[in-house]
Image (tube, rainbow, N blue to C red; front, side, top):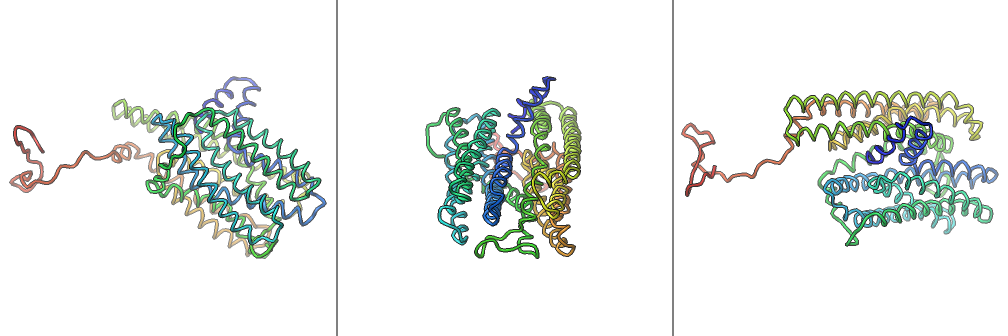
Length: 483
C-alpha cells in the first residue's frame, strides 16, 4: 500500500484543508473500506429492524460471523498472494497481475463456498437466507483479496468510488427489499452492495492490466517458499477474534440457532464497534509511517546495490531504525488519543446506538485491547517487509496464547471484565514483535549479506588439500585454474 500512500501523503502536504480532507478520506477507505461499509450498513439496518426482536439479533450475528471468519480465513491466501504479487511488480512482470487475480479469487471462492456451505447446513433458517448468507460470506472474502490487488494500481479514487457506491447501493437495496422480505431482504441488500463494490473494482483492474493467459498458479508455490507467512496472518486474526468467540460458550453466551450458531450479543456488537477505533491510526500508518519507512527501506538497500561504503550503509540503517521507532511511537500516541476519546464519549455512543450498560462496559474493554493490537499489526507489516516471517509467526503465537489465558481469567471476574483478554494477549505479542523487529534491524547489514546465495560449489578433489591438511591449494589443469 506504500504506493497509494505516497499519493495520499502529497494531498496532506498541500497545506490546505481540502487537501488534508482528501488525503485522509481516501486513506480511511483504503485502510478499512469493508469495515466502514459494514458498520454504516449495520447502524442503518439495525434502526430499520428495531421492532423485529429475534430476527434483528439473528441478522446482526450472521454479519458478525461473516466478517470475523472471513478475516481469519482469507489472511493466509491474501498474504501469500500479496508476497507473490510484490515480486512480480518488482520484476516488472505486470502481465501476471490479472491471471493471478483470476486464479486467486477462484481458489478463494471455492474455499469459502465450501466452508460457508458446510456451516450453514447446520443452521435452522430458510433456504433463501442460507443462500444469501453463504453468498455474502464468499463476496466479503473476495473483497479482502481484491483490496490487495487494487493497491498495485495506486488508484485511491477507485477504492473510494467502489466503497461509497457499494454502501449507497447496499442501503437502498436493504431498505427496499427489507420492506417486503424482512430479514431476508436486509441480508440480500448486503449481498447486492458487496456485488457493487466488487464490480467496480474488478472492472477497473481488468481495464488497467493486459494479460495473454487466463490463469496463473505460480503463487501457490509461495506456500512452500514461506510457510510461516500465511500461518502468522491466520493466527493474528484468530487471536483478535478469539477474544470474542471465547465467550460464546461461557456463562453469558447462548445458542441462537440449531447446534452451531452460538453468540454473546452484548459483547459481539460492542467488539465489532470497538474494532473501528483502530481505523484512524491505520489511516495515519498508510499516509505517513509506511511511506516514510519505505523511503528509508529503499534507501538502505539502494546504498548496498550502488556499492556505497560500509559507513554510509550503517548510517542508512541507523536512520531507518530511528525514524521507524519515532513513527511507531507517534502512531501509539494517536491510538491512545482515539481510545481515550472513545472511552470519554462512550455514554453518548450508548445513547446513539441504543446500547445497554453491559455493551458499554465491554466496548470499553475491547477498546483498551485495540491499542496494543494495532501496534502489533504495524510490527507485523514491517516484519513482512524484511521477510522476517518466523519472527512474525512467534509474535502471533504469543498473542494467541496470551489472549486465550486472558479471556479465561476474565471469566472468573464477571461480565464487566469480558473482552479484556485482548489487552494482555496483544500487549505480549506486541512486545515480542517490537523486540524481534529491532533486534533484526540492529544487524541488518549482516542479515542482508549472509542471506545472499553462495557461489556455485566446486566438487571436492584430494589435490585441493595442502600438506598441512587444509583446503585451498591451487590446481591448474590444461592451462586453466580449476580451484
